[in-house]
Image (cartoon, rainbow, N blue to C red; front, side, top):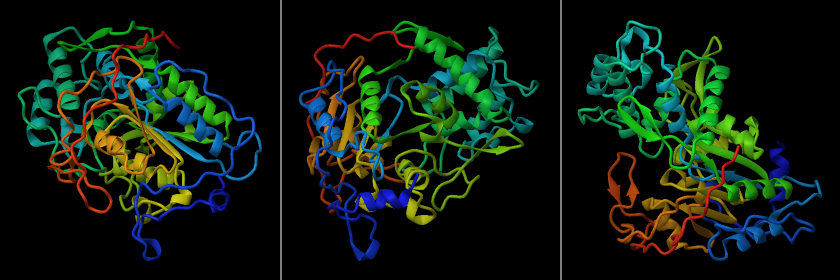
Length: 440
């Protein structure tokens, strides 16, 4: 990718820089004027599921920013979260459930579970060591025995609930704006396997979850868990249209990168355009250590593609920014025109988008506070395309507890100038559920 050409092509953008460069204090929600409308831009073809004028506004963005067939200049950038944004349900969960059901998690080195995560608490490490015998190369989570079920249950609880089966906190001491140790733990539990093997596991889980009927459940340990995933037709159509219009489309996921690559290929996003949690490799195999970004070194394991970490990885891998500047908001002329997400985990890279920001409504506090407040008019709110949520009864607690601080405390959601966003009512929800179609 020619980053210089991208910057030159965006030189006409009117924007306010947000990183403090040249002494200018700015906002991550700076807007930009679009270039003249391109000729013969492709049209979105799926109408069902789009709320209000959202489809029309997306089409207008494609028409105005698209380089539709001209082949000149740098491509405008579009970035998508994956889980519950491009698909319904979570591919990380699907992969973890598959690993447990098929006994593919390796026993930690020396039986010490602390080696799987620097943030794992002593009670969690002790509970895992007690439930999971260190007598085999892989854990017997697939076996229909009391011991196999107990081990699967303990891993499932630590991963899914962030707590042991007895209720003790499983992780502590992490930056809540850069790291979700439960998400990272899935990647870390692939230690010992090659990247190709991990992709094979993800492909098998994908096949099972797409073949299962909507609403299917599967047994893991003694629990019944979600057993299906579907691609959203609307997002497939949007990604296809953006690519045809000359956009550079990336997926930025908090699932392990090899897993995200397997799923993203079906919407035309290749491995080079897929970012996720990256393991450090040793002798061609995954380790329990993670690649870093910005000021975080490889193996420090303290930042993944999560909230501010997604911004850092976009800046590093797409915009070519290295070191400390990768952790900061870049000038508007360099940033993504469009971004889509469904959760607070996506808020930083969504705010960085200069054209439109699509928020799928899953009742996530900070995301919906910012999207509903819509200070610059660039936010689109849409119900989930499959099994959308109904109206949230209470307002979003924007003025009190809608924001998660770095230390995990809850506080008010603030605008760039420091003022507090007032509580917001839930106004975009679905009265009926679009019918999901089986997809491959």
